[in-house]
Structures are given as C-alpha cells and as structure tokens.
Length: 362
Image (cartoon, rainbow, N blue to C red; front, side):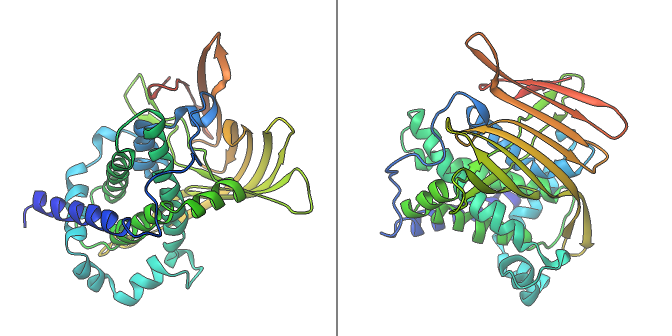
C-alpha cells in the first residue's frame, strides 16, 4: 500500500468517525455561547490562533530535546510510520500486545510511569484536545469563517497528525501510540466538547484555559523556541471566597493555589514535576516514558487569560523561563509580548511576540 493511500485511508477514517458520531442528537455542533475563546486582545488569549496552535501543539515534544531545529526533523519517516499504523491499527495493536495496549494507553490501571502513557492521553488529548477543538471553533466563529466546525476539524487533524509525526521522528516500525491518541482520545475529546453541558462544566466550574507559551523563531538559525502546549484548571474552594485549587498541565503536572481579586485578575503559585527527558523503553514498539524533574511556577492572569508566568525547573536548558504576554507590555495601543529563558550554564534567549505572527528570538 502506498504511503499516500495510507494517509488517505487514515485521514478519511478520522473524518468519517467525527462526522458520523457528532451527528447524534446528544451533541450540538451549533455553539450557544463562547466558552473558551472570547476574542480578548490581551494575555495568552490574544495569541490563540491556528498557526500558534500548530507550533505549540504539533511541536510540543521538542521541549524535551536540546535540538530545536525543526527543519532537520525527519518528517518523511514519521509520516510513513504514523500513516501505516493508522491505516492498519489492529495489526499494530496485536503486535504491541492487546493487553499491554489497554493497560498502557487506555485504562488508568497502573501508576507506574513506565506503563502510564494513558495519563497524557486523558489530560492532553481528551481534555486538552477537546477544549482546543471547541476554542478553535469559537475562534473561527468570532473571525467570521463559514462552517467554523469544519475548519476546526481540519485544524485539529493537522495539529494532531503533526504531533504524532514529530513525536515519532526517525522511528520506522510498529507503534500503537498514535492509534490511541488519534482514534480514541483526540476523537473522543472532539465529541465530548461538542456537548454544551460539558463545555459549561469545564468553563464555569473548572475554569479550564489554554496557557500555552509564545512560540518564536530565532533570527540567527531559525530554531523554534519557547513553544509548548499547556492548560490550567482552577476549582473554587466552597469554604474560601477567593481561593482556588490550581492544576497546570502539559508535559508537566503542577498543583497549587490561586487567589482571585475583585477585578478578575488572579495570582497563582504551584509546585510539581515536568518532563525533563524521554527514555525509549522498547525499541521494537517505540514505547517511551518521561523522566521528571521538579518545577516551581508563578502565574498572573486576567479572567483566565494569562498575563505572565515564571517557572524554575531543574533542567539543563530553560532552567528559568519568564513569559510576559501581550497586554502586560504595550507601546501605545500596540500590545507586545516578551519572553526570557536562562539555562544552567548562564546562557540566555530573549524574544518578542505580537498577536498576529509567531515571535522572533535573539
């Protein structure tokens, strides 16, 4: 089977499942309100658009690599690997091991980090991916695109497929990870967040928000830096008027407290773990696990749109990272963002961002 035909079959299956299931009466494709994207021109929400989503989401895994030259990624090998396994998922699952597939990828039956790939599937693909689908649909609506859910489907397909290709890189063989990610959790997230009641719960009760970074290209060599897809949830304590329980997640998990002021701004602090490096556990199936390091984080936001973040992490690169989002800084009416990172050797990077284009770094 040709690689183009494999891609066509896997992409067609993705679209057929989405359109078929989303036609059930339980799900509504017509949004009654905006839950996750309000069209704000300040903070992290001002950077929310399809191109930044692809840079943050598709290239999320390069945060674990010191090499950020995205032009050197072997896209062809990753493309062939992902399409081949998506086009014939049952063979891939059988060779991976049916029992192992459901234990590692689907059900939360173990908390051993070597077999806990399901955690990222639930947080980043089901909840994060589902919220991203709905927020991107709202972005297309506010920007007056016809059939916004169609555009959101296409954007999600590009971003999720790109994420799998870049994660596989030079591996050429059997892998079940893209099958669980795309066919079960990515599609499940789209269907889940097609429900108004689900969106209302995550938006109002959990205050789910996208707090992704400000992707930028270095002028010197074109490398992609300061990118990464992150989300936050905040649950209000019933016995404290202005205090919330914070959970900030992406390739990390940070737990803390958040205090909301009367004007809607909030100050948060958290501590947890973040992915430092990837370890390949099985070269035959490309099964990987994350090695974690400690993280201390501070956040300041305005009505869930992040204005600034400061993180200290026990990593060789990006030991300290500061992000100031558009609106925190302004040149008259023109809002700009900035970021600064410092590694353990004292080397630093600095970047400038706007709401319209990816940032530039020095």
